[in-house]
Image (cartoon, rainbow, N blue to C red; front, top):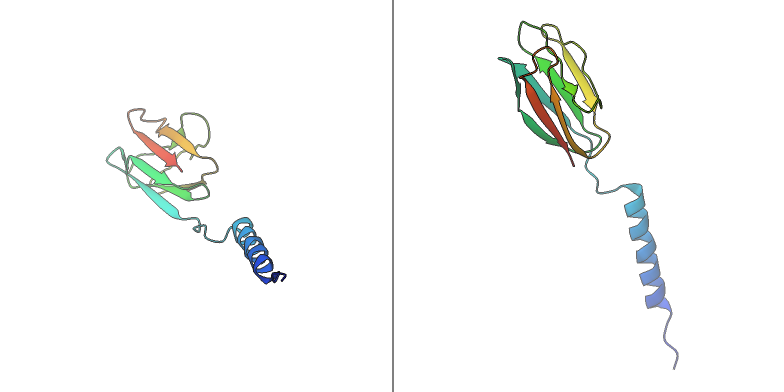
Length: 113
């Protein structure tokens, strides 16, 4: 007596369907937006954890200009005058320390997972 090929075909079809889901990116979270406020000569929060593809926005609430400049050169907000805001889309995993180049004691960290 010969077995039916149906269970093998079903298993093969399920494997193909799973591969398509994985390749299509289904199940991934959508990119998120995060805000780091600059107030009182501090970045708040001082450390933020984000995912690759997320956007980080620095928003200046001080009356003096600031920057948010990655120490490894990955990004630089430029000078944020008054109530200016600047955003960066993070592209790589890792830990990036940054500072205000105008006020070097102001430091923060972006952890990208």
